[in-house]
Length: 538
Image (cartoon, rainbow, N blue to C red; front, side, top):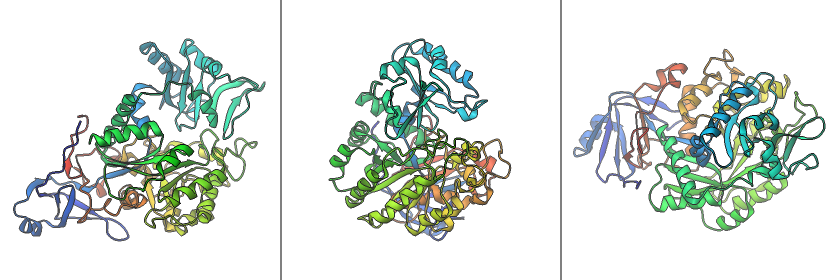
């Protein structure tokens, strides 16, 4: 698919309410129109005045609804999203047997190679126990199997995979990882964070053509959800080459801001090149760093031990001293560090190193902390003070609320998902989904941020309801917040000079209930001034 050039003619889009965000918060204005030409917004203002000013403009009449700047997906893993349809999907499995049934069904249809998939979550199962290799053996018929946990920070492997990797009772835990063991010290079949590499390195890597296919599938999925841009968090050399190939062919359907994996050789190769400042369809934006793991697999690094595992405070996936050094290199080169930090100890360490590392070369490009899930009150206030972006994924809150109190205990649970605290302290919120870990649908995330309830209405009134956000605040985080996080002044607003990336929905978006909001689907989408195909079309 070759991306068509933006129309050189003037287009005037009218008939919908406009979401305009030029002050402290966005607002809806009626009777306004937008004029586009050549991939940019030419004018925004009262419809009658613009028709007189541009009498020859092509007319695009919308039947009501709301016209917004198109959403930016603030944190996703595009290749992994694209490959999900090709693997076993375990998301939503109600218990261990349901997961095993899916694995067995999939493997019967795919007879060769490794059994791979993702999405299992032991916290949703009766008893909440981690699965074991022996249980997986019953569904995998001797083929090696590796299945990622929902958060991507643990894998469940079978005996065949353990044997291929040489993992036994005598295998030590690697740096930044943990091999779960039984009472005799034998590996149970779950590998957390840095231990995943012991098996994942054995899985055949996709070809460059397969990488391109996976990336395109993920990008089309995001486009169909109403996104015109994505921050792809943590790509290696293979995906980087595939992206550049697609970009050279003008094939990318939405804009991609790529964050490199924390790999010394890749950083040495890429950071010597100046970062692109022009808003285009592909640019290397920064580097993704991992401080800790995830709360669900008890890999998030906490200041005090886990309430439900007093022997553990979680993991440092990467030595903070190593991250400090490479963050400084990233900033000096003019690129943006994006630091994964979930636990309160990890968030404090991230803020500490950013405070002492120095200012970025480009003042318009602030550092980011990804997830920022658990933070002590004093550290919440530091985000705004240090101008650090709080890059959060609202659906993590509504997916994890049932078991988060058990991990943290009553004395610390109020530190979870402190979104209102970030805003109060002057920080910028940027929303994403962490797809494919969560559904990338932005309307589900908007409702989650507003209610802090899951789709079934639990917990009633919301998890820690004092941290709920307003509809206007949630929209801003998905639109302008992400533009600010990327340092792009020509994105995230309907105003002259901005990129012509627009989304129309057929509903008055501020007047919907949260339940209605979850059901909204994109109506029409323009990327770079060009209306793109409707969802489901190539």
